[in-house]
Length: 183
Image 1: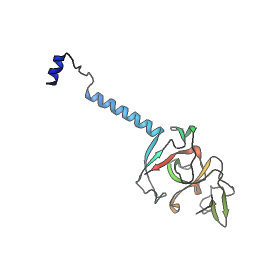
Image 2: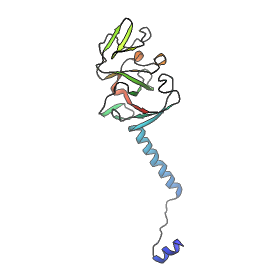
Image 3: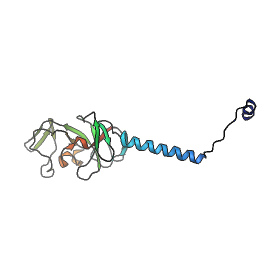
């Protein structure tokens, strides 16, 4: 009935030359491009592997990372085009492990210029006592009096099972890929 009334009113319907398969393919292509843009520049979704952040995150948990938390990164280069923030105490950050290059999540314990003290075989950073075994963790410069400029000190929430700044040293702020926003 509707097409009859359209014919009587002089309105013609134009048939599409694009097949439904082409429409679906175009939609999938646009979705893929949007997904790539979002995961390269804005946020990413990751699955936790390992036990170093327990009890905050457990193996298999899904976490969301805000890649714009500290600045705008050039994808694949790990260089900032511009920055507008700096990690704070307690932030959970994503970065590449300096030794193996794997994406790693740890908590920021200390930021640049926070005091470092090593006394009585104990490490204190920003007033917090941290588990530290100088025989196992040799890359941390315990002769410094403060966290170096443009670096942070990171620690897993499960220090007994965490490879972190106690092992591979301070993390350059330019190596931080984002901030975990929630899981």
